Length: 227
Image (cartoon, rainbow, N blue to C red; front, side, top):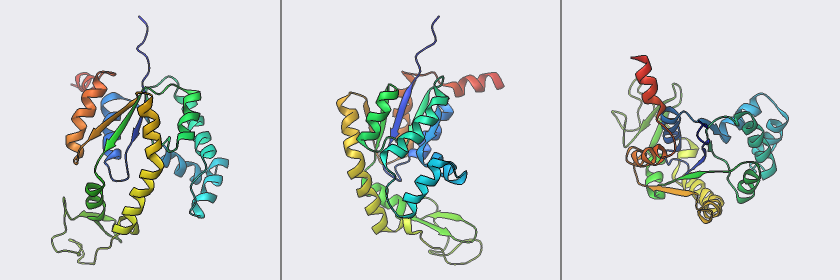
């Protein structure tokens, strides 16, 4: 019997849309290899590879990393995953990157997390941290006992620059401007599957059901073998 065809998927969603949580669940249930452009960039910068040094020079100047550098980084990594089902996260970010990816491999599906910007803004700006310990509070889900104060030390909490309302708005606008054409590109190819909602736990079952039509749930198999 021929092995089932491999699944090549991309996940897209604005910062704060729950992409990390959803990706982790996809990997757990469907055993896909997860390739995050952010993780890969950090790893290459840490190891001071040629691409890493190049990328860092752009980041340090506050500039976007050019398409050809990102494409080289990701495609190089994908070469080692040709026998696996995989999920790309954070790439492609531009139509040029999507076209370069198409030349190398056939994408089967693009999972788009369609979470309203207002929801994301509330979610991200509700995050406060205790700088010394790194403890994170969320005013909606896990607020401190006293507003603005760390539960354990009684020291003041701070909001990261990234989580300040004006920064969050800018990040979301930048994502929208950059990514809309990519979503359109995949929509025209008939590959885009949008999942709308305001809560990750309510969006997840729909994504799970959709992926079950393409791959078996390996977590159940693991559970069966370990009992």
